[in-house]
Amino acid sequence: MSANLYSVIRAPRVSEKTARMQESNQYAFEVAKTATKADIKTAIEKLFDVKVEAVNVVNVKGKNKSFRQRQGSRGDWRKAYVKLADGQSIDVMTAKV
Image (cartoon, rainbow, N blue to C red; front, side, top):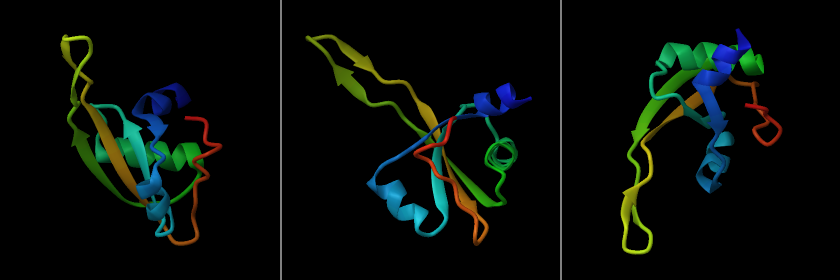
């Protein structure tokens, strides 16, 4: 069962923006492209034992890059913003996702 949860939630996204969001009980995760909001909510609640209030999902387009006169692009990925109930928190630095 937990292997399926780990296939939905790939990794926490840690940046200055997400650090500011954590002050208002919001966290960002990289998720599977096929994951729905309901899948993400149940996976976060079971993995971290917290209560999720809302989930917002964003499809991120891969950037075009060039390397030695050869064009390529990074892959597209999906990001989920998860809002937790008051009093709940996740320590993303020690989270094993």
